Image (cartoon, rainbow, N blue to C red; front, side):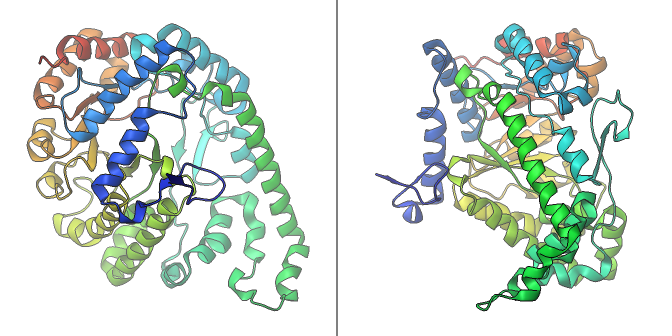
Length: 457
């Protein structure tokens, strides 16, 4: 029997969810992914192909040998560029974005085992909100730019640690959001929501008479309507599972230190904080860990999730010493990972840069609960250190997919498969998604998997 413990939307956990072990919860999530009972497949052939591909992904997660090494094709913006759609157009013209993906899928989806979906950030939305944290084509970048650029800044001041620690939601609403969204300036005028208790607070309600607040709220309504318009256009093109192309249902989290160092303080300020106010950094990381856990576990859609992906930034080799990693980075990250593993969620760690100096002591989780996507790490060392317990993938250089030849790409992939594929738990993937990869190089990756990645029983 199933009971919906998540409100009016989302899937339903079993009645005995709280009594299940983490391993049982994980199996329940994997079984749901394999069964795909709620997927309306377009054909019986699509259903069969889904099953074949889904079993490869499950074997990867379980550190087992499938029929063949799965491939995560780093197509990037190729579905758009092949069809004459620029990055800016993909953000602002949803019809063109959807049409480009449709054409790409009709021609290449089966060959590359990659189903393109039109999921670019809506340009009109970030324009309306005057987003400060990114630059994009036509807004801080040239119109013909192929991607977005992170605009780091000190969005939280050094003397605001206590504000964040005491009440993160209030800090986010009244200080952080107005700083990163020019269109949310009106939120500064809000009184703390907790000031409204029992008796209706006239000063609290009078906030809504403030013209700046009204402008912000009306803008947010307009943003919601633009999202609805985008979803109405792109919605019919995003159900890759129905077409026979499974993807592991994923939500995203960040290492608490990265939330603090990327999103709030910025790199330069964060480096100083580790020396000037280390206790506050640790306290803030612990608080961020708590609300990171809540944001996933209490999400109404949590029963639909199978894994959590983390883009790991400041834990990479060269950014901090081992002592700093052990002190500031790993404890709060592990706290988050442990909480999610307890909920049966697979942890997918995207180690940007290199993680070579971390490999010997991050393998502390039960088998099959963590997968790693490596950018520039030594894959032989990664396989030796993690390969018995964790699925590993990545390392095909983005530069190779853009500037290399198919022969070079195929040879590189062959070596990776030979190095990492034994015993299973390996997926062929790039170290990161490149702008403007060559089609023939993606085809070479697939050919390498087919020719060298088949497991003989």
